[in-house]
Image (cartoon, rainbow, N blue to C red; front, side, top):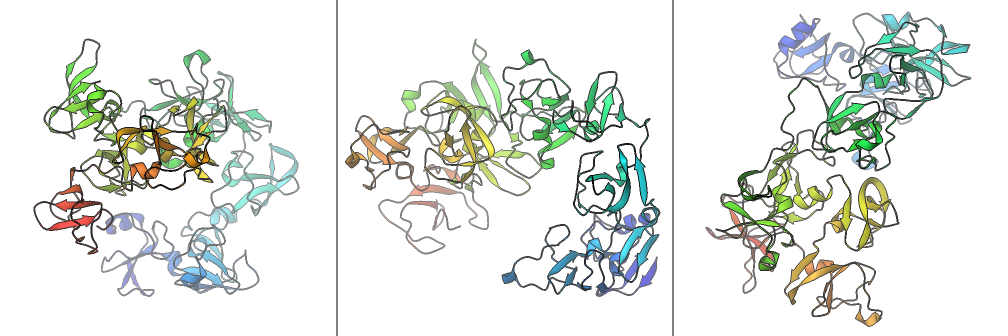
Length: 629
């Protein structure tokens, strides 16, 4: 190592040539302070070990650059984009990603990340020690890229020779079928035929053999461009294929490396890849993600426990939604149970249990009529079906809420770790945007909460619905109108495949029965109004007009009707009297959810009266609106 100037840094810098020396100096994975890429030798590091690292090529980047993609004006190296916040973000004109620091900028509003001046223009990999560099235009090439032949005769395109060129049209490679991530860089191509081949795919040999990680035989390159259906993923291909002569299957190049076992956020169990199935093995052949039928004559992923099936393209579409697993690895307990069974019935049903979120034993019951004024502490919906209850305190759980696992992967959450079941917290649900004090799943990474109602509703599978005879399926990309609330242009809806009927997930999760102080009976959720008299279409709670085509709550005994929001109120999922823990920076003691009726003390935060629901501490003089802390 040798000392160098500090390139604007406050401490002296050391030049490191060897990667082992770099690893010895690093305390963790470190990024270059200019280009933001992972740092590698040769590079500069701070002699005072303050965490400053700089690629050598980034440190020596010229202050003015004549870029081969922009001949009109030179690009100037700037520490920050020259745009103010009011003018909008600075976007790199090469990769379409945001530029935040150290960019090459032209007065005609052309911007490039610094990292593209620190990479080989041929393969877009980081520049090694030995490079070709043109000081006149800043055009960088690896030694190996500078020595590539200008023309190439390729067996997949015999009409014309392929010429070394930039992939300016960002065409996909005819060998692997992919477009490189950065789009440009060198390729071999035939411009008249729109035929391109990646540098790494260009080598050709009739003896090219590739081993597959999930197939017992190797695959051989088939050097003829013919249309085919890939037996691994079931999608079409018109580029070079790879074949297994033993099994008579033909696949894409990229499908050779398809993992045999993955853990997907879309399912609770591990799913396996196979090249074909017998139809009778499945009750339903619809993909659990897109709901279109899976062709069992081609490859798919399936669960051997649940006999559910997935398109390969649907499972592999989002790299953050799955993890690759191996057959020799021990399968983790994918559904860590929330309960311990103490007693079983003769029919094999758990009658007495312990739930890890409650301190007493819970008993199974189906006596719904005796508890019609109670709600489940898990989802805060009324007790309408089989449930567990505590004989020592006012605690109830639906059977379906009891059976949810301690940890759960969900497709609609982007973080990698599974969500963890929690309770006794005041939280804001990121899916339905409601304040709740019920059970929830919390992400340890981003700290977001998702309530039990949303977890259950958005679990993949067919759903039944009030007043609709066909099953509903959730379509993540579909946009349309909700039949329950009338809101339009909603992305992500429960849809019926047989008719034009859609529900958003909030309306799908509405409680079938609900209480309101204006009526001693339970209100029932209703999806149509048989009363033809327009003067009857009003809300008995707020006494305003009501749209008869919009879902509402109705009491058949008293013949009263009301808007959904009027019955549920502003905070329908906060249980009165529940004692919850809030963040210590809000209040150090547990607080109770209360409703002030006879006196209205001022909120400890905003000093305005607490007219409705509030959080109150019985141990000290603290009370606050739900929204204030």
